[in-house]
Length: 307
Image 1 (cartoon, helix red, strand yellow):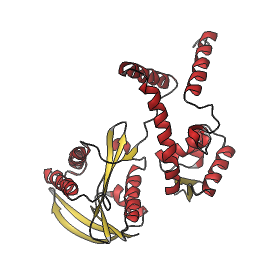
Image 2 (tube, helix red, strand yellow):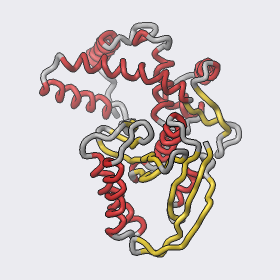
Image 3 (cartoon, helix red, strand yellow):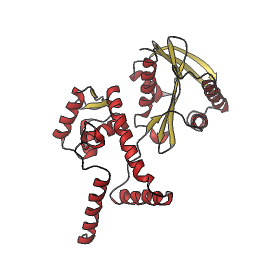
Image 4 (cartoon, helix red, strand yellow):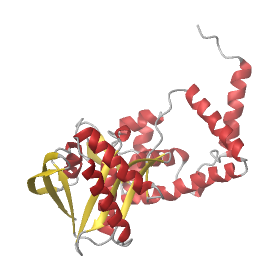
């Protein structure tokens, strides 16, 4: 039987709690000079990091009273920050999602939080920072299994495009038996993207978890009116998190802002998960042709969406 904690141990934890809440500015009613309380900011954060939350799941994850969370979500919906859609798994529940306005609202809050911590760490020597991060990991492990770090979507950094090529080659070989000609094709697509990149009408999205590439999606010019989605992939460790849908959604949002009228893509019928994502956005399959490529007999498919 585990012995009861000593008063000194309890005092130490309470002292640390008082210290870090004050040091991070968490005692302010509305931190980061925002219009939102700390709890509201945390709700926005969770909705920004993961798609597919229901209110019940979100409340349990944050330990919030259902009525309190419901009032927060109603305020967010009234401001146009959050949408609700019927859950395909449970008709009694609604799936929550941040709107574009919601993501735009959350972005400066996230940046201020980032900058606040960066300013704290800037006063520490590199060795002290490493010790601090290790100590925080010890605290997290002591109070329960750590949850996976959130996945951010960002622009490419040096080395990312090579990773995209390598991971496409490795994953498609492992999962579909594609040969090296597929990796060569991906390399050609990436090279052409870099050579002819038009930032006003093209974009590459990289999914990042703690500095590791978790997936990608590219939106490129097909013609003046039509954009094309290319090189969508998600690492196995990130599958089931809604990341594929997030990446495609980013492509479509950018396509609309860039003035395209239509979006097209080419895929193969064996990529079942990807096809479900495209269908969820309203893409229609307009062509299917058998072909022999990458060492396999495949059926290539063209899908389109009018924006």
